[in-house]
Image (cartoon, rainbow, N blue to C red; front, side):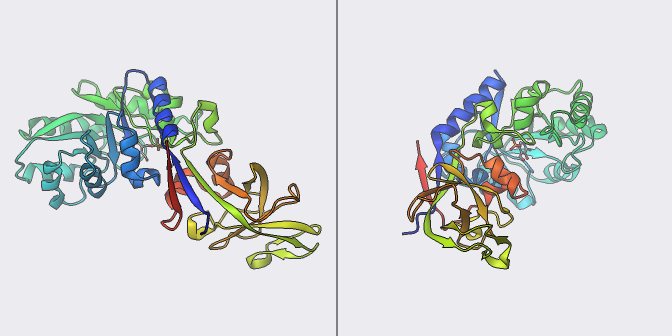
Length: 357
Ligand SMILES: Cc1ncc(COP(=O)(O)O)c(C=O)c1O
């Protein structure tokens, strides 16, 4: 059998939740588990994080999967509902809504709700993606309060540039949020992972960690170890061939890498068909037998090649780690021109899954 597998370390996941608790003491935690738990398995992650105070998902399908698995904690639809036909399910399954647009509020006013629906108001303080304007926040909040079937929980905003600790936008967003919510009742929530670790003034009542739970630094150029975060996902495989390739010969599709000398080249059973990024260039680090070697040549669907000059003794069957334990996903993502979020979400169904802890 092909030994390409993704292992999910639930002990590390729970450890990372403790790091959230230490960084934002006394705050409630809404764990972001959208997009299949950032690729780690929605239900698996939510069950492992049963200590969190709630979960944030992107759409009702994700919320319903959690309820079907017996998760009773508060679940917030971070984009509210997309269509009004979701409203009966929202009521039935006691889902909380993050309302980001006046049209959603109007739709709720026109719907005949049969139970109380809990809602957050999302205010756009500079991301300019979702959220009501700071100027309209107070009057929309009053509409929520006036609705007999809505229970307004509080106000949220989302940080656009908190991953850069020197970016001036974050201080502006914090200030605009404070102004927009001054005098409004309810709780406040601003912080994503970068806010939790880098901007204590964003902690408010609730924090919404995502990527740090999965063991990745949220900061540009950052590394998880600096925050004592542990990798949760490890993508691994093995060498399926080791070949001596002659000086001047090229490796892989497009002949993008030429051997500078006669040398051993290893072939690893992983490729973009497994979710390994095709844009990972020559030099992207790969662990063979726990030691770093550089990727050479283009990533193909089922295989990548590595330069084994530093390990001439390496042979077929030797273990390979693509990211995770021993090799930060941040580094691989940087080499592939992406972010660890995308690496995790890209791992495909054909990769065997192993759960640890
Ligand atoms: C509204 C909201 N809150 C929190 C998060 C978690 O962000 P991060 O993974 O950067 O911690 C996200 C993720 O994009 C989000 O959309």
